[in-house]
Length: 81
Length: 404
Image (cartoon, rainbow over the protein chains, first blue to last red):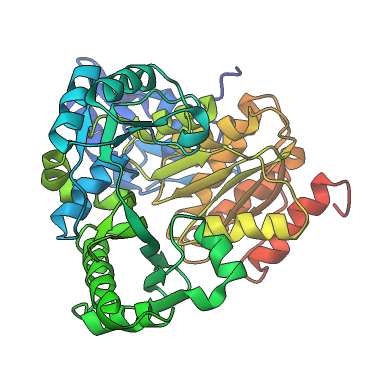
């Protein structure tokens, strides 16, 4: 089987935000489809869940402006603050 | 949910409908004891959830308890249509003067229960209805109001019965109607109801089917009559497709998927659902000359993984060339999520979504977002201005090599 994680959605977190442990905890808490996992060193993207993104924008609300970008691969548009 | 005859008998008995003295036995010794308790000639009947018992040797008559035990021994080891019996029913060989038919079933068109009664029982009621329509009485009853005996009386009288027979048969049919309502039966049937030499009416054989969704509500009653709720009661062994779809559904709480392929041998896979949409769309595909490979239900906002899982299982079925992804317009299921799922299924199986998905017709929430996804992969889609009938026609035409 092809590796097709993130066929439709890509999520990026800036390097500063990715190492913010407190932000990682918030992102893990707000995402309804478990795209973010909080670790001791910050946040990790759970790639197997990327295509489950429901475009709710809760991660954008939880993070500082520009820290998280949700990219829709099927039309090239982005969701960001 | 279907019931064994002995369980149906216990339900009938609980409803106050007279039955003959009977026994349920799991061993030859228990059958011997039951026959001795009954006294006189008995009939020993295999308890299996399938028809054709008599022809298969699963019903035998015995004049003595010893003979009943011998027959029980043989019947308990006899497989009928792939089913092993859970026991035997030991029944007296009743001296019957006349046999009748009584049933209460759910009439989907009228959206209310319908009572049926015939003075020609013991045989196939469809055959009686066709050859002797004046011997079948029908009558609907309310879902909301208490069941009045006179409704049952009218139904019985329609097949010409009068006098004390009418009164006795009315009590059986009215009791059966209450049983059907109280226990949420989709079918409650007694065939035959027998008039014995003393003029009394008794239920000799009963067939009950309970609405699956109601089983939890009747758990106590079911346990009290000996129903093993852990036992599967399907008409047939679930296929690999059905087991896989069920496992995918159970593993993820988001949304609902179901899949059935028993009796389906077509080349058009169906990923369909929404408020009666599955039945309508399956009919529409057949009516348009198509051959569905399966029946399915998808709805309640499934995850992408669950949508993908159903589509992959459908696509992996032998003989499936294309899939049609269709829903009724009453769905709140997100169009974009299902679109992602079915496209991902195609890609993971190395198939071109544009070639594989014959039509995508899911009107509903986030449909504009869904259409962007479908555009990207070149999948033909339709919105609510295209009827389910026409969408099915498009899918059938594509798989038959017609209009693209």
